[in-house]
Length: 320
Image 1: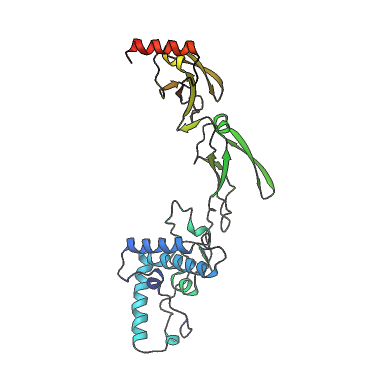
Image 2 (image 1 turned 90 degrees about the horizontal axis):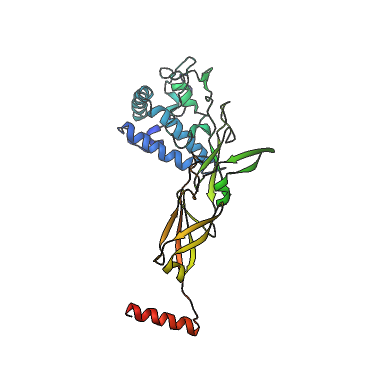
């Protein structure tokens, strides 16, 4: 390598950190750049892809104590050489290059971003391969970096279900790469529930397995029922006479009709509970929430003479 020109890569500058930055600062700077320039956020943007790869390479070195130590020694030597006003093309790289079959380890730092290295993680520079190619695991062949197999990222797709479908469970037929897949959506799902379809996410890199597909459930609003967790809320009208004297009324549920007993003296807006008439629990569908029924008392709008007379008698008895 002596006499052959190779560009020096300033990894501190690439990550935008000071040469004395600690491990936490380096990791924070890397994560920020990786999120900003990830190929998924910048589809088709070659400049962003290049920045993403540069950030991966910089963190591979600065995030590894052994590599960083060697890089710092090389940097001091390079700066001294440059400071003496010498021609960069004459720098002796031979004492810094590595030999052997080693390669870079991929330091995956994202648990919840589904492996940033599954896309765009390869293609490390000649500088990296020459200086650090022998310091990692068995990922390099003939001194050139070969990406490790990486699991593909998970994918998400929204799916709308009615409240009745959420109550009973349902299914959807997906078309993926000209294949039809039936997916069961279990009873009790809520808005935000995720149904996993194994192996139908993004393909893996370098022979790695595919990620999973998650159907993200949105339960549509219902005309009669409002859902609160596994409970359902509804309203039912009753007459003034039922509220005052007591009686029974029929209430609609998701499984049919139910009878609700109304005690004498029921107040407008009072809520009654029908146990076990709510939504099934997602993990134990045999168990169900409750149906909360709010009564709306209907007052008579028109009275005939006899009714008016009776109400007047009631009013006088009550002292009104």
